[in-house]
Image 1 (spheres, rainbow, N blue to C red):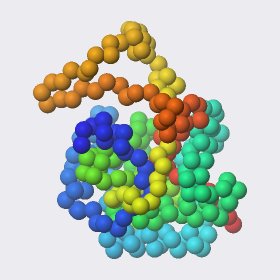
Image 2: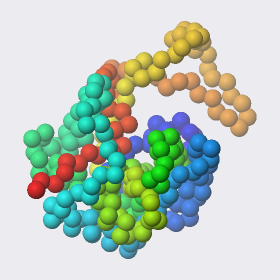
Image 3: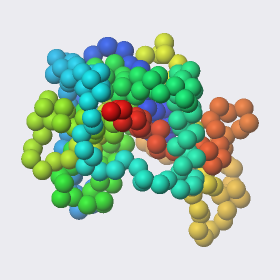
Length: 274
């Protein structure tokens, strides 16, 4: 799969088939992902891959906590700022409308939203999951390295015909995860990631992205709109692509300040009521 296709076809899939993911594929993906960049080559990620009976047991334990209305584990980091300012607030709201609207769930239907969110802890039916930890002594730059690593993993999974869904939601049941993977002392669970083959029988609308001019500023040089529109050159062993086209009125991707961004990657379930 060509890299542009991997990037644009990657999305957070929330319905998987039970078809097993071969271990050799996971090994190949994670071995290649180890080449992801990190500051001073610290490679601060600690990854635990869970499949088979161990994953089934983890899902069962998490499901029991959800059913019992068990309080979440105390947070070791905040998923989002307490007060999101514009345009981030609008993007998050737009994502919620699209996510739950696609499921036919009304904004005021608390119980249905809770049931949908609970699918996080069943890995949306995926047969494989990985959990990414970081040493609690690491700083913001190393947490950024985790994001670079995770994106590399997800793109390599696409190259293998697989889909994924990274989930910070697992951090609120981190103690249950720890019972299964037995992480080393001093590690913080950043997120889980469900991995598998997409269940194409389930409709999964894709959320959009903000237009380029809303998030990118070109400083110096000619305006991108004035650049030549010649066909991109080809070199042996390389494919050079022009920048992606702007959405058109017929495009199903929303545009403007209400378009969701990377928050598509993570469901933000509400805490259990006490």
